[in-house]
Image (cartoon, rainbow, N blue to C red; front, side, top):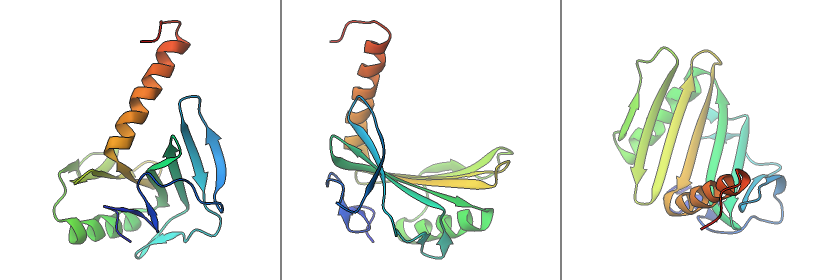
Amino acid sequence: MNEIKGFRGLKWDDPPTKEMVLLKRTNFGLTLYELPNDPLSLGKAKLFRVVYMFFNNGLMKVEMGFDGRNNYDLLRERYRQKFGPENGGSEGGSLCASCFWWRQEIYMQLWYFNKEGSSTLSLSHSPTEQKCEKARDGERRLSRGFPSC
């Protein structure tokens, strides 16, 4: 697995595979998919869900959910070993702990929410995510009755 180029055999901007199951489609080009039989682990960490997000039919982001502080610690150590020290985050908050890495055009976010005992790891391709955000903002303006640009 090489998160810089993609995730689990998919490269950033690749279309969804035929095996993927559509979860949601938006008006601005974002679609969410799951892959049946997707391994629910990442290294030694155990996941409960993997969601693939595509913008205009190209892989933009992968979000993984997992439970427990132990899985957070395993993933934090995995990415520290793989990518070095994080670029930001906070370990001391009472609500959550977080780590962030930026490598080339990839942004990785790792969160642990103390109250829920659950976490999220997201890997995103920044150029594609920026295009999606612009499209989403445009859709919001249209839905509020503002003229489009």
